[in-house]
Amino acid sequence: MSRFRNEIAHLQAHIKTLRIGAGALFALALVMGVGWWSAPRDLTIHVPPDLRSGSTRKWWEVPPESVYSFTFYVWQQLQRWPTNGDQDYPRNLHALSSYFTSSCQAFLQQDYEYRRNAGELRQRVRGIYEIPGRGYGENPALRVRAISDRDWVVTLDVTADEYHGSEQVKRALVRYPLKVTRMDVDPQRNPFGLAIDCYDGAPQRIAAPTDAAPAAPPAISPGETP
Image (cartoon, rainbow, N blue to C red; front, side, top):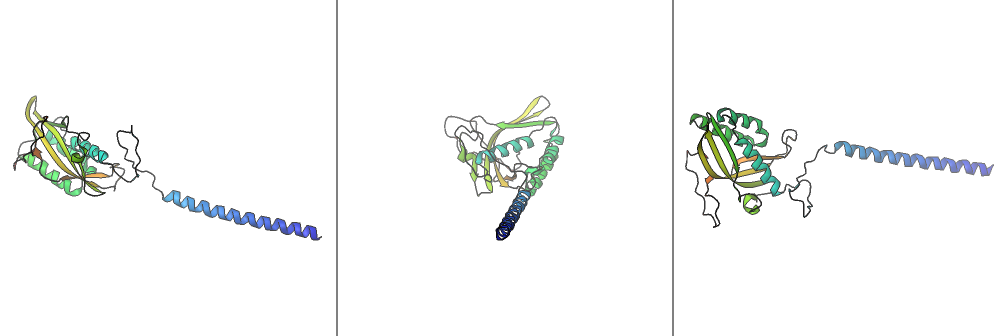
């Protein structure tokens, strides 16, 4: 009888061990489930455009080339008036509102009203493009200056062309110093997690690219809009 009792005790101890193990596995699965549920569903990863040499980055870091690409893309879209600046400019302001800070939106709205009252928008077609040799790759330190982990100053050298009908009325080479900040508050409408905070200084007229080092560009006079 003692042998059967020992066997029963052994089986009961084994069952108890299995129950403890099952309970531990359930607790571990519960903790992992809570962690999985609380994890973000989407992550924005900024990958540099040139991967020939490889890249290792923390996922929350924004490389300067991504900041430059974002700024140029948004600013170019804002300045693109394909048919009539009187309608295209405010439409762009509304469509791109997620990519600007609130203060910058107010500033651009005032700029629109000033241009409209000055007659600079009606039937105007406008576009800007990067000046060859003045892009990010030629001088990265000049194009993007890091202020902090969340703030940058991006310098864009562009050509701005404006037409009234078929007649060109303006061609200006302009340097835009733009403030950019991290603003990851609406991933649905702004997947970049960045926002333009308008000018870091007055836009400046610049000379055409030459082999010699360019002189300091003069600031645009008051009342003159690039």
